[in-house]
Amino acid sequence: MALTATDMATGLDTIRRVRDLRACVASWRGAGLKVGLVPTMGALHGGHFSLVRRSVASLDRTIVTLFVNPRQFGPNEDFARYPRDEAGDAAALARQGAQVLFAPSLEEMYPEGAVTTVAVPDIGDLLEGEFRPGFFTGVATVVAKLLIQAAPDVAFFGEKDFQQLCVIKRMATDLDLPVTIEGCPIVREDDGLALSSRNAYLSAEERKRAPALHRILQSVVTRVREGGAGCVAAAEALAARELLVAGFEKVDYVAVRDASSLAPIASVGAPARVLAAAWLGRTRLIDNLPLSGS
Ligand code: AMP
Image 1 (cartoon, rainbow, N blue to C red):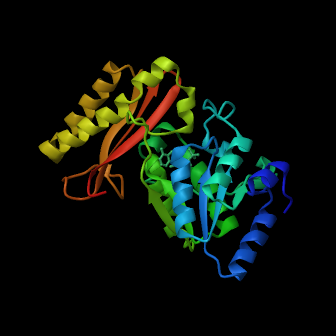
Image 2: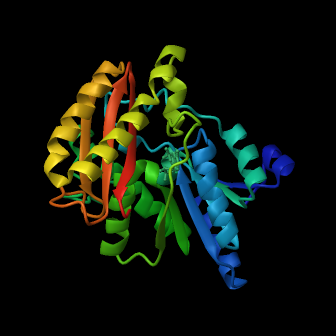
């Protein structure tokens, strides 16, 4: 487990090999310590840090993973231009109190010949799954690998990617993975825009328009709370039109769904969520809000 110059400066241990990660976690376990894991694709911001702080506060040791996972990007998506700043991320993580940054190479995660995948049908086929075929299989595969590699007690995921959180909970349950999956609230800018590494793609003009997504989701929440399940379809359609008027070029979906199954809702009693994905120029933004009880 070699320390790099950056690590010496920050006190954070960067690990690149699975076998070194396992040795590190085994030594912690031998000392009776509890381990938290925060999977990320890097370009860290306040949303990621909220997960790290939660892990640091509730567990003895925190591992943050940094891996831009090619298997969750479609052929025409932004894998090549996805923002990358490992040195900046490492410095910030040391300040947040994490002990390890696990940043494996592509070859370490997917050695030649690696073909096994983890598919989560149904809940993984809806919404994001419809617009990004293969996305959740890529996510579930890499997260399953990270959970097996690090064997944490608790793994932290943001509600920002609400469907992803549902898919990962389903996968961990179905595979009997001995880990608690903990969802954490969305961190937003003062104007309501949810923090995202992809916000860096927005032009100044697009950035001004972006908070409309949150605002319009708030209107859906109000309308459905007032009008009941019967007005869901109208509220979804109106929100899609409002997004276009607010300067979004394309709306993939605005959907009010059950907060566990992500199925359409029949009443407003059970926990529900309004979720949306829409395009500002070349940037696809996603966001969601609780409707009731979730
Ligand atoms: P990513 O690096 O985009 O794959 O995100 C890594 C983790 O951070 C995921 O669990 C995300 O849901 C979470 N995350 C990203 N943005 C936010 C945010 N604004 N608030 C809370 N969690 C977030």
